[in-house]
Image (cartoon, rainbow, N blue to C red; front, side, top):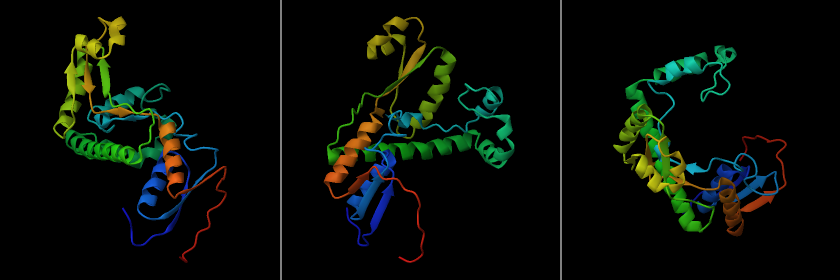
Length: 239
C-alpha cells in the first residue's frame, strides 16, 4: 500500500489509536514520527482498556426504551447513564437530537451503521495482526452474555435478531448449555435463566497491543520518540 503524495507526518500520543494511526500512515508511504510523553506506548487510556472487540454490542444507546430509564436514573451516581440535572441546560440541543433517535426505525438504522463499522474494525484488526504477527494475549473464544430472568433474555434476543439479519452470529443457550460452555458457572446453577453466546467476539490486552505494534513500527521505518511532551503546536498556512 503506497501513496503518490508522501508527506512527513507527526502522530501525537502512543496509545492504541496513535500507534495504529502511525502504522497505517507508514504503510501508505508517509514518513511518520510518533511522539509519546511516557517511556513506552499504551501507558495511559490504553493501559487498562476493556480490550473487547464486540460487534455483538452494536446496539445504540438511543433506543425506544431509554427515555423512561433516563428519568429513573437521573441524579443517581451509580447509574449506567449518569445525567445530573445541573447539566441539563447545556445539553438541551444534544438531548433533543438524542431523543429524536429513540424510535424503532432510527434505532435499527443506527444499529446497522454501528454493526458495519464494528465488523469492519474487527476485520481490519485481524488483517493487521496477520500482517505483523504481533501477539497481545488475543482471544477468539467469543463472549457469553448471562441473564437472571426471562424478560432480560427476550429484550437482548430482539437486539440479537436485528443484528443477526445483518450477519451477526449468535446462539441462544439454556442454563445447562451455558455451564457446558463455561464450566466455572457450575456454582451459579439454578440462578441462570439463560444466555446468548456470540462466537465471533474477541478480546485482548490493549496495552500489549499498543506496545508490540509500536515496536513493530519502530522496526519498520517509523521514528518513535518516547519521553517527549508536546507543549505547543505552531500553526501555519505555508506548506
